[in-house]
Amino acid sequence: MGLIQIVSPPLIAYDRDIFGMIPSPPIGIASIAAYMRQYGFVVNLIDAFGINPFQTKKYQDKFVLIGLDIEDILERIDMEAEIIGISVHSSMVAKFCIDLALAVKAKTNKPVVVGGPHISLNYRQFNMEGIDFAVIGEGERTLVQLVETLRNGGDGKGIGGVATPGTTPVQEGEVVEMDALPLPAWDLLPLENYWRTRMNHSPFKGKFIPMITSRGCPFKCSFCTTPLTSRGKWRAFSEDRVVKEIKELHTVYGVEDIAIQDDNFSANPGRAIRICQMIKEQGIRVRLSLPSGVRTETLTPHTLDVFRQGGVSYLSLSPESGSKKIRRLMNKPLNEKKFYELQKHCRELNIRTGICFIIGNPKETMKDILLTSKMIARTILNGADDISVFIFSPLPGAPMAREFEEKFPKDFLGLCWTPKWRKDYPKWAIIRNLLYLEYLVLKIIFQPLSIWRHIRNILRREYETKGEMGIGRLIANHVPGNKKAWPVKPGE
Ligand code: B12
Ligand code: SF4
Image (tube, rainbow, N blue to C red):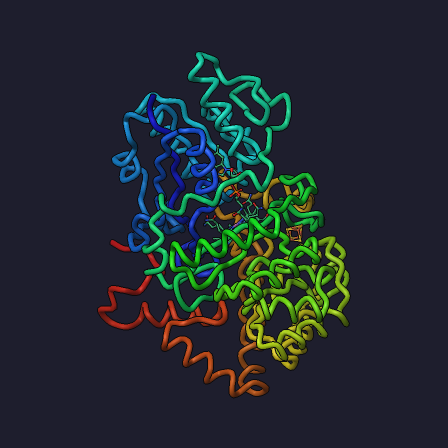
């Protein structure tokens, strides 16, 4: 019996777009590999970004490809593999993954299976290209079922959660009970290379790793696809399982910074509190961060106190807009009073905060922008450390994408938070820059001491905010002859 080969594609972003160039070890395929190994499968992972994050190339005119390209990946594919899987995280990599899948098929003539968040809502795009199998939703159980069926001479059609060219899945795929999932197979991924980039999805000082403690989200923000892929369900590891994983990451991999990348870590606030209490009681010394946006509805000042005691050092809050009208369109209600209180409390607790905004809604007027600008000012006066301003991009499947009138790229390339293909992009880019300028000026005026702290962190390359990581990277790139800098533009 051959092995199971799974490929995670390189990172693809607009040239020099630091908003899109965020590396993070691919936890989805690490989870599948760990689960399959339990059943005796031999799994080999090719992390096309992680293997060589310092190799950059021009891609499709306006983009940059970071990591291995198709030829590099083909060289590494094990010809003994009985099936080759490709993980498609976002629409940004869909075009590359189709080309890769077709090239793999042509070279190996083995079955190719794709999966990942993009596939769950856009499997037809891959079916139309004739790619053998597309797994919708969580992949652990479905991939085992698919491989076993193929081994037994089946054609894979009719398995829940599997789409094949010309057929739609008859039923949802089976999901594994959360606590039955083993710890991700990090031993199969080149973590050291990620650490060498000195960039991550979340601030860090030492060795970092991502972690998922729950899947799905019960909320329904209209720009997001998670409510559809998770069907509004939220499933979580038990507190014991989460703490066990944190302990192991710390002791086995020497990790000091853990980025909890859940869609909604605190959907069950009691569970989140207990996790942090257990970390404190057991004396586990790691820094935790919550970079994916924590819903204010699920937080109280007390929750934040316990988070701090459990090691939470950074979290991002996502009001998304200062305008009620825009928040309504995003289906993201916000109690502003509570938001400001929580934000101030984070400051008191020394939890670093990043406040996230999305601008560029087609119905957004100057008045709405001014309200966002006002909110940014107030958050800085309250002591916010960082802001992130994204430009709205219609992610295929998201409710807001359906209302978006401008045609988005057919191949989905460019569907990221810097949508340069939008006709009105230049306008939004200027507004984004002005909002960052406002942030910087107000920071210098109202938080002068914090500037020194940011400078110190950047010089030490030990980051407490996302902004420090970005600036640290840009500076490192401008030091002549600095071979350690993670590149921002295509190489030769
Ligand atoms: C963490 C995260 C990131 C991280 C880490 C990514 C990584 N390397 O894993 C970072 C910050 C780097 C990131 C970047 C981006 N992301 Co992101 N990200 C997420 C998030 C919040 C969680 C993903 C995750 O770890 N889930 C947990 C793991 C266990 O699940 P999983 O990865 O989905 O894997 C499971 C299945 O998908 C499947 N599966 C996965 N791979 C495979 C392969 C095979 C062969 C099979 C069979 C199955 C399979 O099985 C796995 C186990 O059950 C999701 C939201 C979500 N819930 O999906 C958004 C999400 C996937 N991201 C999104 C986007 C848009 C982006 C960006 C484009 C944003 C940007 N900056 O512009 C970039 C893309 C970067 C690039 N150029 O490719 C969108 C994608 C929507 C779309 N259609 O494009 C999502 C859905 C969020 C949203 N708002 O809607 N992201
Ligand atoms: S943006 Fe966050 S809170 Fe809103 S639906 Fe998506 S995952 Fe849930």
